[in-house]
Length: 223
Image (cartoon, rainbow, N blue to C red; front, top):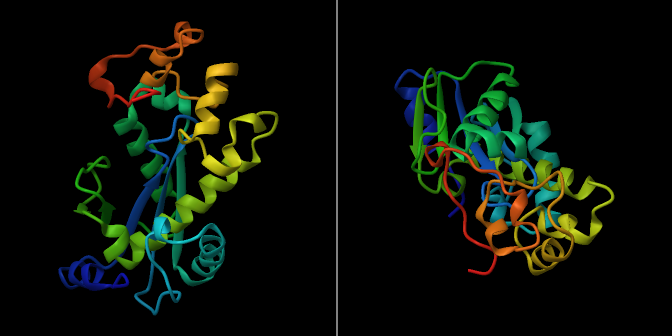
């Protein structure tokens, strides 16, 4: 079933004139920024075939991205760098990226639909968390596509580190990425506070340590 405007219309009927859908990408990557997109629509017919970006092929995502850019009323995009993730933890990095995305919108939303069950955005934004919102809500699905395409494009553009396969894996732990990390170590684009470094004896000394309350841990390299 394709995403609908059911939630957007429900929130609008409750007095929220402008509703923004938000989704993130890059949370589980080992390298690159975490990216957040915010999309506002006028409740008009969305591009045909719009759905969660993970359900689309790369070629279809790119075509859908072009359609969304001309259709949406407003699009905002924000990132938090690997350095911010290392220093602040993922939750705060997501909050900052989402704030940057919302600041790019041409209008300030009255309410935000946030994909997932955890509100990483918080005050002063009124937030409605929606599990699988990228499958059920038009504005969140559109945000998922824009966030994915923009971040993937950036990761593929990084030069001088082609061995890591970022053009294909976007910084996620693919076999090519893992094997190159073991051989060459992390780059300036890697998140150095994450536990994959525990499984790399040659590079373990590069790991950054922060207050464990600052953010979530990650799976190791081989398990």
